[in-house]
Amino acid sequence: MTILIVDDQPDVVNAEKEGVDWNKIGVETILTAYSVPDAERLLLDKKVDVLLCDIEMPPRSGLELLNMIRERKMETRCIFLSAHAEFIYAQEAIRLGGFDYILQPAPYSEIEAAVIRAIEDIKEKKPEAHETKASQAMDGDSYTGSSSPVASAIDYIRRNLDRDISRSEIAEAIYLNPEYLSRLFKKETGIALNEFIVREKIEQAKSMLKGTNIPVSLIALKMGYTNFSYFSQVFKRHTGLSPLEYRQQNEK
Image (tube, rainbow, N blue to C red; front, side):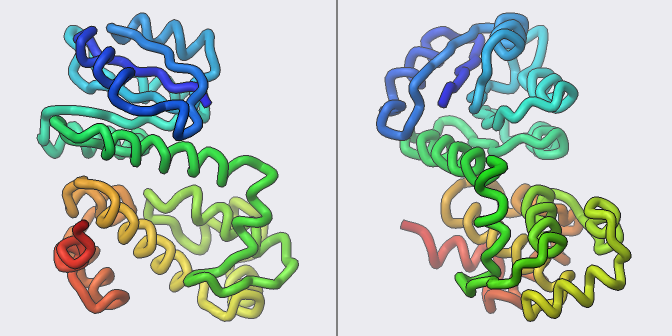
């Protein structure tokens, strides 16, 4: 794995480079840059798996790097480190597909945990992992169906949890009739398609509530819920707790 650390303050870059045991978590190559143009050149020249990046680097922004990554369809996971808690920054990072958003100052253990999640995400979404990942249903129950359309639907859902995806969108993506997909999905997995989507979102939200300090409102947004109140209602219906209560109960 290769990581690129970007910040316009060299001492911050060096601290992050030295503060995490990168080799222990599977990072073999560490690249560094102190400006957006330098980072752009490295991203275009090297295969970067994880980008660890500050947002404000006048006169440009780390968000520009994420935008370039998305435009060029790179597989790089972007983790933002910022001392700014403004909602607009995080909202834009999430809209562009940022993997995580960490408020500084943060312990190196939190940075390390975010990078580990990014690496795991990369490994899970490699082509050879798709079938295995898609063949398991919620809560550890084994999904033994061999239906390729259902596996494709599950894969599509898990790759798009950050959006409000619909049955019609999923069906179109895998070239099936929506009604037929719903019947097939329920038959093969034992759970309705829409309910599966919600459960996947809630599981991902639970993971972020336990493993990050991302504000609950931003977690809701990252799961495709623009209405925070509605997200809280759905979360409580599935867990018996509000998102904040769940985080408090799972604090280490």
